[in-house]
Length: 179
Image 1 (tube, rainbow, N blue to C red):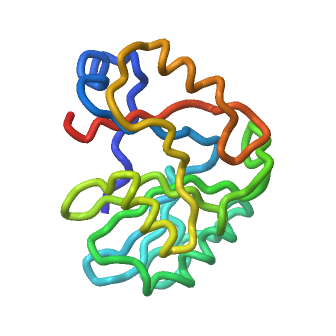
Image 2 (cartoon, helix red, strand yellow; image 1 turned 180 degrees about the vertical axis):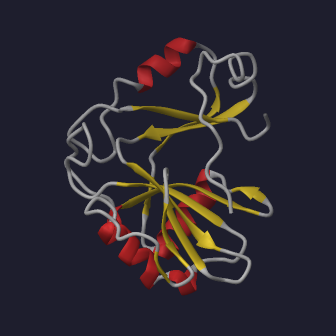
């Protein structure tokens, strides 16, 4: 079970020439804390933050801090719903002001799911919404699906209010599943 791949900024040499070629999916980047969870090859639940394991082998590696506590407890309670050989990635938002931005709302069970990865690859947003709903979570907001024709289009998205309300978007996440 791997952490989420490195995220490149739009101008990075690794993505600048190809990211916007063809159809993309653009979602809201939120101001939360990264969480990853899934079942290992022995169907044991693993939960980690961006930096460290929180839960492994049916016990806490470390007690989750208050930002993660409710989300981790909920994930433990639904582990029977998790699919084997599948990784779930989300942003924990434990309160209306989790980090820097202040939102009007908090997602269901404190997690916005932004990716589900299994043997068949990444779930597109439509499937992601179904997975999140089944597990009792919300997803990051889908802002656009299609071909971007200019950087001005991207800049216009940044003027939108967050799906969680109360502030403008922190940023955009652009996924090109064909790259």
